[in-house]
Image (cartoon, rainbow over all chains, first blue to last red; front, side, top):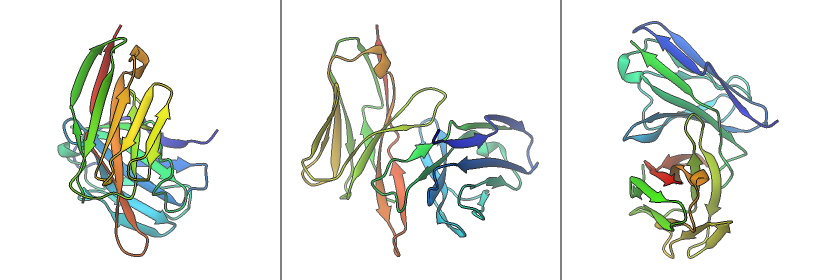
Length: 114
Length: 114
């Protein structure tokens, strides 16, 4: 089954404790992206990647890191999480440049930073 | 980043009623997409509109792209409880060398009451 898999689904952590949210897709997609979704602010892009070893900042990259060492994986790293990073996070992927292609989303990771 | 404004922000209607939600921008988009997001899940693509003036139908849902490609609308006929969800529009913003960023509106949260 074609899918984008995020883990974990729920995560509660404390300020300053490094964490990684994993994202994997099994569709051989070139384009992958991370979004955060907050009430009243909608979906905002954190980072995106057009292909392996190619990553770029989105609208809200501060406090986040990403890497794209393999085509299928695009982990999101929070080196020193803070409470303002409490949010619902989505990973997404699509074919090629993906402009008019369907963006496939994972089921989300609900992160709480205490 | 080009902004997409969606209206209304919230909409609560009775089953069987018709409704229209809007996605507007001051910028021209090469294409626009509509997604629906249900609670606890990631957004799922409904349609992509590409040509100014284009109308696409998906069962009881009718999507229109404005002639000037700055706006789009989604009309639902005879709404059903299964239509409940967050409706998001999204459009690409291009950078150099084929890179782009997909920007989302904040969404319209629709509740259809049985």
